[in-house]
Length: 177
Image (cartoon, rainbow, N blue to C red; front, side, top):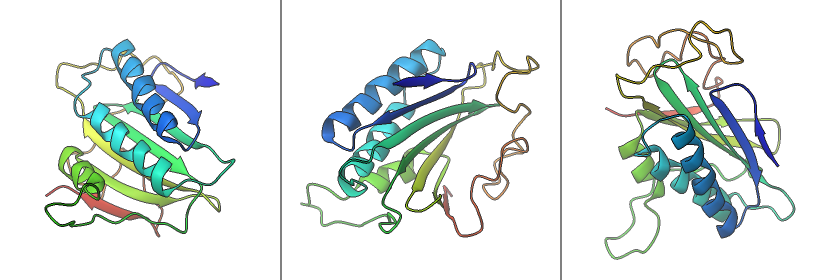
């Protein structure tokens, strides 16, 4: 069930349930530990994105996918579900509301995040975080599965030069300011 390709690429399909969301966080935590990466804030981002997929992206019989990539100095977290008709938007709930703050947390914790449409009926909600300066990607120069190279500054409109575009023309991006 767990598919791992390359040293810095991890992907798993999970059921769109609260159990699937918990497993996403646990799998991500273990994968980040095995890569020697800090858990914070990635663990929280995975928890929020997976919970959203299980709650709002749920279609009976269709799983959601958690994918983690490390490219250069960036960790990218993607959660893909099969509800492209339900595009998430940050909410501003009442102070006594018990839910509705997930994307506000994502916005606060990620360097940038967005939504990319996929093949119908899929959509991907993604978040990127900068890795600590002392982290070195052991794949660099090794010719692994992942493209290598430094990220071009902090301009959220410029994706990593070796990655496919992070957001197709119709995608929404939410950079931190």
